[in-house]
Amino acid sequence: MKKTYLFFIIACAVLCTAPSSCTNDDNESNPTISEGSLTSAFVKTLDGFGEEKTALLEANGVTNQEFIRLSTDSAWALPHAEQKKLKSVRDGVSRPDGKTLLQKIIPLEDISTYMNNMYGGTIGGFVCEAADVKSLHTMEQVFHGLRLDYSGTKFKADGAGYAVIRFYSSATENMYIPYSPELGGSQPHEWPNGGGGFTTSTLGEGGYPEWTFSGYYAPEENAELYEVTPEGREILRSIYHDGRWQTYESPYLPSTTTRSSNEAIRNGRYSEGLIQTLCDYHGFTFHLRGETEGRYGLSTDKPLPVEGLKLIERGVYGISVPCSEVSNIREVVFSK
Image (cartoon, rainbow, N blue to C red):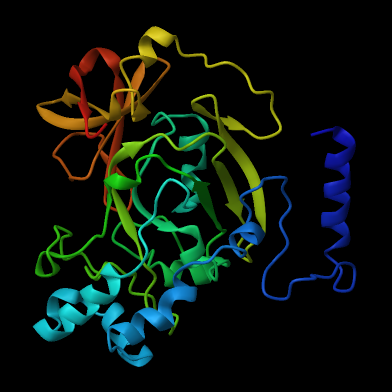
């Protein structure tokens, strides 16, 4: 970005501090201050769960009030008949594919984790279709709508904001609905995750569909990472380009990691199929997601008894270790 344009943005920000200085043409959302293409304004043009919800509920004989109650309750505690109703509705939600824009909410503290490619730029864990949650913008809406008050959370309803990654993926066949065992899945009973495939939103409109990746995969080219203010204003921070997250407003530099090192770490779509790299560390199996400055970024969905392992997002634990301490690096091919 040219310096003159940067000065223009700063000037606008100063002017907008006065109540009458700037107006918002879209009363339903805050303006963006970025040049990305995957902005909230773009997301609003996409059809999602909100557009299919009425027909889906009618097809399953579920009223809106029933849906609100069922989707935001503990699925494992519902009567069997109501569990079937809830599962029928959730199974009817359209499944994402490679053309579906996805998004993942991360804490502000973890922006540098992605921008510095600590975990190889890969994405996994809980995600949503961007269009399904397009009504959630402010920190408070996102916190309560997606139930980010899980154990160990870094989010706060009145916090300084959050970050969002919007991306397309070639690994959508490795996404599953996080059902509890009572609904045929393996999601543990970990409230506020209700185990019914919807967030247990407290915003009064019912839950939002969520998905979980069964691994960690590189996003498609030109994924975007935004910092979002408490009121929903977006600031583009990083773009996924040439196999790595790169800081916005900086030159697209070649990777500083040697290619011979990267060849052992493949998480994404390749000619052989969908590949995930695993390894062993202290007697446990980890996902090997990236390498930087002689250290591997490892993650797991289990709270293993390994010193230094910490919660890096909901249901995902991570650690950075010297490359020399990792063994049995191997690839798993899921499909062709």
